[in-house]
Image 1 (cartoon, rainbow, N blue to C red):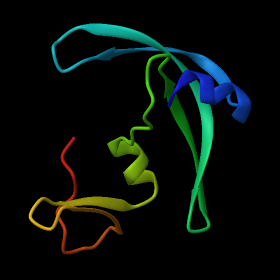
Image 2: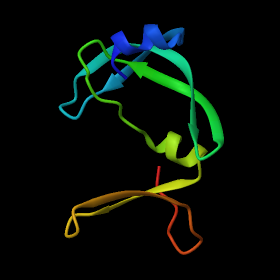
Image 3: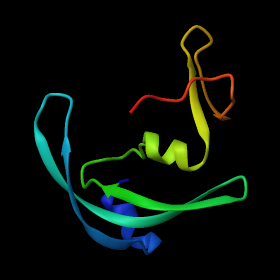
Image 4: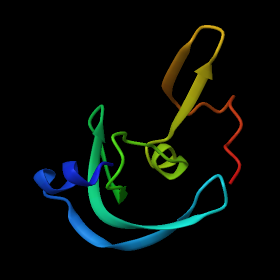
Length: 93
């Protein structure tokens, strides 16, 4: 989440965390506790704050807490967030 959007939302700073980027470099970022609601279901979790970001990224833990699966269909050019189904394999960690 962009850092400048966190303060107006009143997010509570929690500390810092180290992240390893795709190129192998390690960065340190502030974290905050936040609450997200989807279709009436509310979950609290850790949000990573990035001063240079303009995007909100969603991780596997977020999807698991809401029991959702991300389905990407490049041919159809669609991305869907769907309820977990017993027919779908569980994401590997």
